[in-house]
Length: 299
Image 1 (cartoon, rainbow, N blue to C red):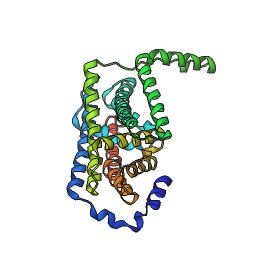
Image 2 (cartoon, rainbow, N blue to C red):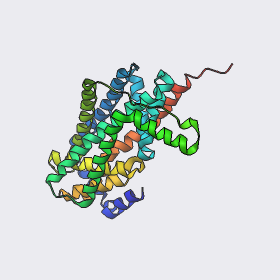
Image 3 (cartoon, rainbow, N blue to C red):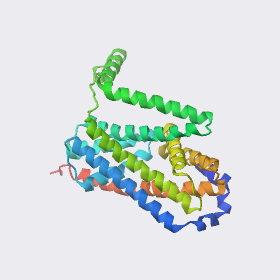
Image 4 (cartoon, rainbow, N blue to C red):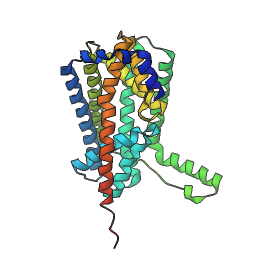
């Protein structure tokens, strides 16, 4: 939060609020449309994954789960609040908690793979050392996640044996294996995730265009991916400050002055994350109301 405040103050937009009045509302409302489309695709992805794991859910529940997770995931470090999805599925549909975690794993893995390869396109341009380090770290992380996908049972078994030996406590003797899905289903979930991120790239391009700047769409995809990866690695809830700062800096490198780059980032984050966070907070109350209905009433 401190980083975000510093970014706003240093950009000088507090004394230059008229910059927001040049906004082209045609582009702005199109950006909102793609932001909503992105949310719908994420809702459908959870709906589809639920079908794959033999738990048919309603579109209403898929929406409640996904929108609630936007709130819980983004107020916790490392998006650990995303585990709410697995908890909800277990409480209402009896889905094994580990299967729910497997569903979340597919979402996160495909997102970070796509973001990494989009960010990797920056190697054809001028690149600084910090970006190189981030890309290397992300590549290692992806490799570890893929290894964990195929060897999760063995890895968890080894770790649990070590913990049992160290603590002399059998409660650490656990068994875990990520649920596998067929290559065809992997391709479909990957495609849904790819389309979702395309909507994010288009939304940012439209927000930039709304301020009168036309940027190469490939460059938009690259800088957006890099800024999201920076935010994820920071482990700061919502990536707040880190994501905005890195994206504003990268927009400046594309030739957009800071008095415009910061407003662009703030408007984009408002329609893509801040507003969704508020909606997620409201819907999260609905999700708990749904779970309370499952509890038997006291006699």
